[in-house]
Each structure stands twice: as C-alpha cells, then as structure tokens.
Image (tube, rainbow, N blue to C red; front, side, top):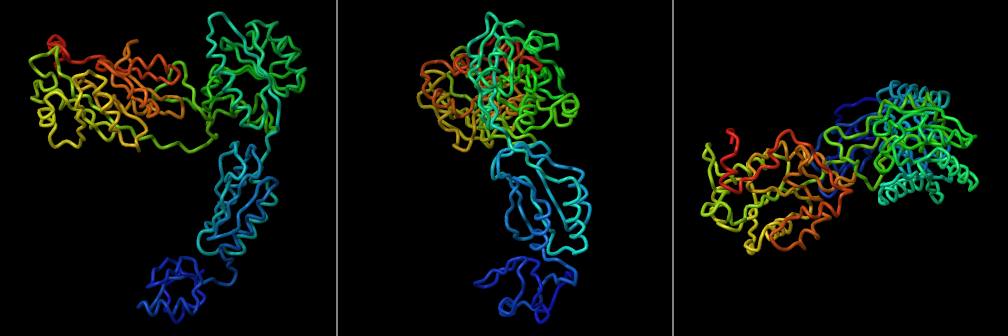
Length: 546
C-alpha cells in the first residue's frame, strides 16, 4: 500500500486518509475518491489530498476483516458485517467464553495490520454481548499475511469457544446454629438464587439443617431425590478443614472430597466434592454476598460443563485477588450484582461535600467557635474548608446560618458554594437538610463534614471516598477509631429523602441502625475523626500542631 500526498489529477480511485469537511459536503476517511469527490475538492481550493493507493496483492480492509472473521467463527458465536475494517464477534447464547491465548497471540504477531482483541478467558457473557473484535489497521493488508492468518485460525486450537450454560437444578443446604440471624439466612438464599438464576439455573427450595454431619447428609440426600444437579452447603460457621461438618456431610451422603481451599480472595475457604457425578460444594462465608468472589469462578465453570478439579482450582490464582485493598467492611457488605470476570473497573462516583457551618455555637458563647483563630491565624472554619478542598469531593457546599456574613468573609476567595439555612435555629437537622437539598443531581452522594472538626484532613476524606461504592453494598461510609464511630459521614443519594424528613436538633446518625447491611467503616490512624471543638475545654485540648 502506498500512502502519500497525491495531486488531484492522480487521486482517482485512491482511499482518503483523513476526513475533510467541504462546503455542503463531508468526505469521510476511508472513502474511495471518485470524480465527484475530486471535483468537490478542487472547488474547495484543494490542489492535493493525502490518500492511500492499494498495490497488487493488497486486500481492502473490509474484505480482509470479513475473511478473518469467517475463519475465526465457531458455534454459538455470531458476527457483524465488516465496516471500516472491523468485524465484531458476539455471543449468541449465555455462556462461558474460553479464549486460546496462544492462538490469539500468534495471530496478533503475524502482521501489524491484523489485530484481534477479546474478552478475558472464562468471561461470563450474555446473548448479544461483544466477545471479540477484529480490526484491520487502515486501509489494507497483504494477502500473503491474511492467508496465513486464515490458515492459523482454522488449524490451531480455536481462538474462541463459547460453552453454553445448562439449566441445572441447584440444591442448597443451610446449616443453623443458635444465635444466627434470620436476615443472614435470607441474604444467603437471595445471593445464591441470584447467582443460579444468572447462570440459567433454578434453585430448589432450600433445606435447613442442624450444623451437624448427619443432618447435612440427610438434607443432601433429600435434594438429590428432588433432582438436584449441583449441591451447595452454606454453613452457619465457615468451613475450616476438609474434615469439618460440611465436607463430612458430603462424605456421609456417599460422596468424596476433591479439594479444599482456593487461591481466590474472597473465597479461600471453599471445599469441592462430589456425590456420584453431582458436584457438591461447601461454600465460603463470602458467598452470602452477591459481590464477585471465588464461588462465581467455580459455578460458572460447572454450569458451562467445564472441569473443576484440583488442577483447575490451582490455576485460579492469577486474577484471583478480588477483595478491596484499602478497606474491607466487616461483615462484608452485599452488592446487587455480580460483575463479569475481567470486567473493566467502574469510574468513581462523584460525591459532594457539605460543610455544616450554621450553628449558634451556644457552648462557646459569646464566641462563635468557627471563627476562632488557631496559632496560624486561620479561623477554624477556614481550616476545615481548606482540608475539604484538598480532597476529591466536589462541589463543596458550605451551609451558613448564625453569623453567615462573617463565615462567608472567612472563606472569601475559596471555590465553595454557600447555602443559607434560614431556619438554622431549629437545630442541626435544619442545616443538614439545607445542604442535602442543594446537592447537584449529578452527584451520587454527599459527605457531611462538621465545621468544628479542623483535624480531619483531605487524605482522610479521600479514604472515605475511596471506600464508597453503592453498587458493591458500601452506600454509607464513616470513619472509625479504635471501635468508636466518628465524622464525617458519607451518604448515598438514595438516603437523601430520609435525611430530608429529619426534624429537631439531631443529625442522621440514627439511620445507621436501620441500614446496617450497607454501612462500611474505615479505620483511621488517629482520633481526628472524633475530635470536635464545641467547648473551651475541647479547644484547649487541641494538639500543638493545631
């Protein structure tokens, strides 16, 4: 292929390299220049054009993409038509995608004009979901290279295979110990049902049993008589050994244990066994959550008819680190959906910061505590707002009330938005509601900062922002120091209506007890998140750095 600047007189039949906007007309990249296009270029004042001219043996991009796609197709994988040198391959049924990395790598090394991008191996895919894309780098490829690619795609191990999920029936045994909450049982059943349904299966009516070997064995036998294809045991207490009551229940029911443990976290404590030809698993504690964990690796392969034994489990370590690094809610928070293995990380949701600065400072009267200056000469409210501005929270809303003009003067020149609470005298809830009501609709939540806590740094706030993920069940985030909950508190937008309904001189902390399942606590290194300045004694006790 020849790529060069051509005089218009020589450009007929060449491929336009870059889109050009002409008066009343757009010539798009990749279009073949005909007499009308060349005339339009001349009328627009162009004397030449950058274009590509194919040589003998070159295959145009769409033809090349079409040929390679035909060679790569396997059952249950469909394709789009070729356009701009691209063909997309997609799943026709729900299933598990297997990718032969060696074949894909060999194809991509043949010629820089030939590219194949795929989802990760073992990706769970839905019908019509994109699994791979072929792209010919503009605007052609040599036929010799393309022919080798076609032969490789047909002779090597298939680059892509889709293993459809089977509509298996799944039996679940729930063991019980005294003191276990009914909500825990319900959450485990709901999470298991969601997993099974997503894999096109059916969860049989769960059976409850004592946390004892004989009771588990009896329940497993009963589920087998009901037609269970896969058996699951969710213990009231986590399985810690292949001789624990869960695995022993499988053995007593006539089965055997294949493997205990796996290099996936969360999901380490899983036990794989079988009763006859039916897989039987003792679930790790994290299976109570719908968040991606080790059980998803195993179930997706079982539903797709793929082997899951000691060798396959041992190979799950690469890509098996799934847990959060910065924080890990205890107990692990639940999430509404299980992401596909290998899915790209989501963008962090935007969060507004609300700084409450409307109070009358009655315990510090006649002074307004927010306007008291530290050794640096900076008022407390100024220091608080500067700390918030050093975090990633945006926008920053400052709620004013008592001595509003003085507070605004102390914050002059800072990129904040002032929100006045006219009924601030009615108590904390009035200020809180004013701030919540002013949060822009594009924000996923708000972190509520107290105007009298100058030791809370922007880095601390960023740690709370980093833990916030409503989709993964962390919808309320607050700091903790040595077992004591502190401030600021971060709230998902879904709680705004409840906050706006509060009245009196109280905040929103009482809502934590109502929504414990979505509360995440972030442990802090010092007590800054507990220290507010609301009395002269508290001010005198501030550390020297303040």
